[in-house]
Length: 296
Image (cartoon, rainbow, N blue to C red):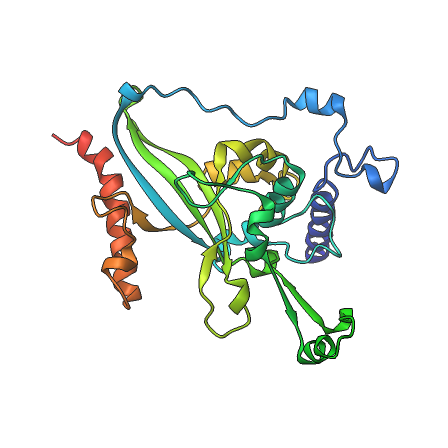
């Protein structure tokens, strides 16, 4: 009997988590209202990203720019990858890539860039070649050679989707704030990385960043989008919170250096173990600065 009671309590708890997993679900008068907060609710929640504090350049005693690779097949990084199939899931659940792409298309993220230095701006039209591949089959080519109009069935279109995103590259600054006496981190840029669309179905396609987003430009959008909280679905976390609080696992693959910010693979090639050890060495070098500040 005791085991039966425990089972019933567990089912009830699961139902509660499922019920509260979406905003406004208990007050919705129609399915369309589920997940949509009213204006009054937004004002009451004061729902906006937490502003960064002002940091004067004179307060930065030490800094180091680092680029990290966030691999999406690691379990801790799953909230950034899933869901990849949105046909049978609520509209409030989207992967990080879908959130970024929707914001770029709608103009909510006004600028995207070609590289992590944010020097060359791109438009959605500029990056279409990296997102879509359109091929004509042999039968279609024969149809064109015969002077006939190309049939749609002979056109193969391959789009980059959330399922194709293999990793994210992020750029951030580690700095020691002498006013607060601690080492801090500020995320500056993020880029979705996918196989080259022209070789996406090959055995070992090259991975390329599709575009770079200046992170402060995207904070409003990422705050509105919620990532799944596996511990408690009643309290989803925003992508802005997830990234700012570093709730992911990343590997440093580049740091600013005198050799033109060369990557680790440029001076350690064909040895994944040594590359990983070098990444950890760079990370520990940055973290040890704070420890050394309080060593006498």
